[in-house]
Length: 159
Image (cartoon, rainbow, N blue to C red; front, side, top):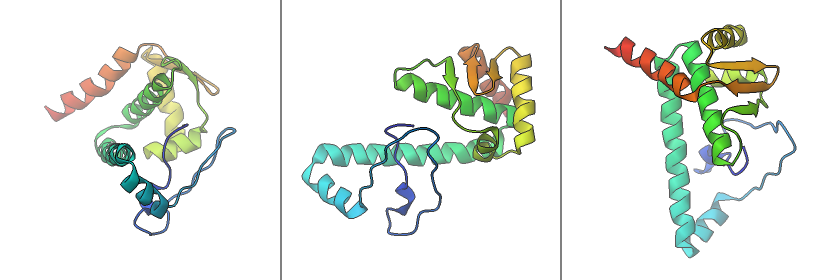
């Protein structure tokens, strides 16, 4: 999504571990780490924001690893959709209705399941009246219940 960083894993001077594909008309700005470091020395506010951004990325990565290890496919899909919902809301768009720019195969890859599993997970969440997906259009029917679906199932398994 707009304003999100890409390629932070290469800050140490190593190669990038992944690639990105634009799913709609986009603009990307490249900034060398050397230049970013130089600017951060000159601008304390930039240094603080950079630290916050890196912290968010680390937290997101840790959360993703936890999700892959502790949630089933339906819960992973629900968490993925809740994440998109939150990101759209932060940008002033609807948290309940949005367009998926990713294919089901890309979503499956992102949440660590097979693409056939995505269809079954969507059907199950629809059956529970939590969300619907028609083509690329998503509607989260009840965000509170969708969150509870993930939390309840996870906490009941841990008990």
